[in-house]
Image (cartoon, rainbow, N blue to C red; front, top):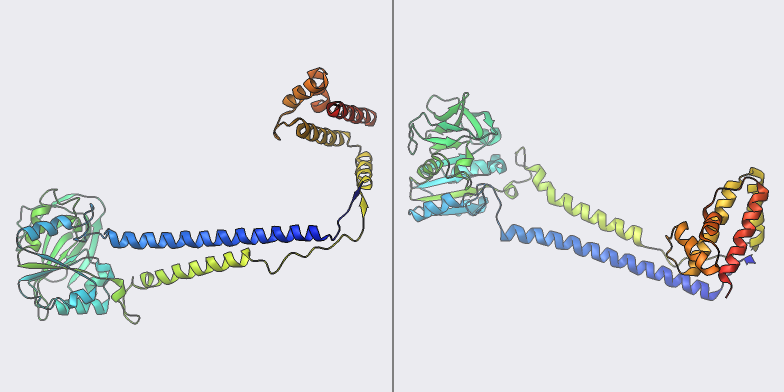
Length: 397
């Protein structure tokens, strides 16, 4: 028997067909991956359009939304108009002394957008800032500093007199806490020197501003606790209408100043860059530049020479156990295939099948296929002859 590799046309055709099949499978997998990415992006976009999960958004009916307050205000004759972004706010040209402006998502405010919002609402009856950070307070020029906050819900009494708030009112004070640097400001719902509400009176070019750190007062999930509903409705419903302004990071220009706008503006470009890199990697790793090139072996090697060489190596190493294990494994593999047994059949199952085919005792066949290793070379030769005889008996018709 010889081991030969020839440059035959049918071999080349078969290999070319295999290469073509692999390329087709890779292209199919690439197309499927791209389709899945597009489906995920589309699903996210559709979900964003179909539903609203923005916290304290009057269109959000979830526990952290503010639809309940907006609906009650509307039912009592105080319509709520939502301004999503700066353009919507600037289109509200009739903001006057009967309008209350509510600003949520204040982390999206920058120096320019905060100044523009304040100019637009300068004639409003009241501006309610919900949980503003230090940057928003500084951008609006308010004499209020962040003084801490609470992550746990607790009830706090007002302890102050303000338009829309009674001293006995109790709210769920969770969120930001503030301290005023102006003696004219009124602090309410104070705990540990941090107030959940600070009212700054009107000044030149600026209306009455209420800094509300307990944004949970407006949330659907907390509106029925304590006096949250009454405080929210009285705080926002004193005028004839409410303009609910939700700032957007998209309104921030490239040269504007804001501590948080850079990350959101870079988010989608980064996602797009990652998708492009992923597609490029898939195309790079899945592409073959032309068909495979086959070459004949420089020499024809007889199989018996390989067998004899390996035998001499085992004999020199005196590794009769390993040699016997290889002989037994080869015999078991051939017997399993010939008898039609599954590839994972154990030595016990194979011994039973061989015993039925040859008439030998199961224990004798088991000892040949899975017995102890031979003690010396003589015993190994006997084992090899016995295995060969056993295979011939199985193949005998």
